[in-house]
Image (cartoon, rainbow, N blue to C red; front, side):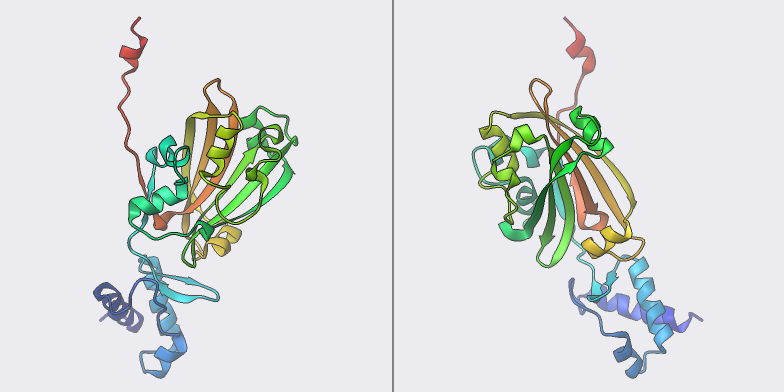
Length: 262
């Protein structure tokens, strides 16, 4: 015979799957289920922890236990950086993801702080600077509605961005076309990028910022952006809630043997 907490977890899971509890909806408080005769406080708590472990809900202080959004955002790999989107239009990268996912957005879904800081070792190495040299750090928190999806901090050499909209901390992208358009207008047209990703457990600070349950995973992204002559004009570190994104890449398959043929 299944323990009481398992029976309750299965009952609640069925209500989630049937849509009775909709994505984003808060489940009843533990005390309410106790008063309704669903079990003791420890039974209900164990049931909620089981639902969380199964990926059906998230729990955080101040937000309670909430049904997880089951349709992740589609994070475009290459197409999100299409020059036509930001150079000729106003579709910056995070907005391109929302458009591809059929989701609503507001430019104010991105907030940011800008500061001039000593370059950490990884940033200095990417830019070819001495460790501790001053760089601009533009730290963004991106939300979908009230739920954070990811953070992204871009690091720039001061001589590339001083006096531009990139160092303006106003919420939203850095004007029409965002940061890449600013660099383009300043004479630094982006030509190619390198992205590296790794999965890991969120730190306590990241879990609090992204409203993640303890032990949830994130995907950390390192993006290096180059001009045609190899100048690094941006090095960025992003931290994405792993379950809130699906990653999509569409690209031409290279043939290095053909490319090497004189």
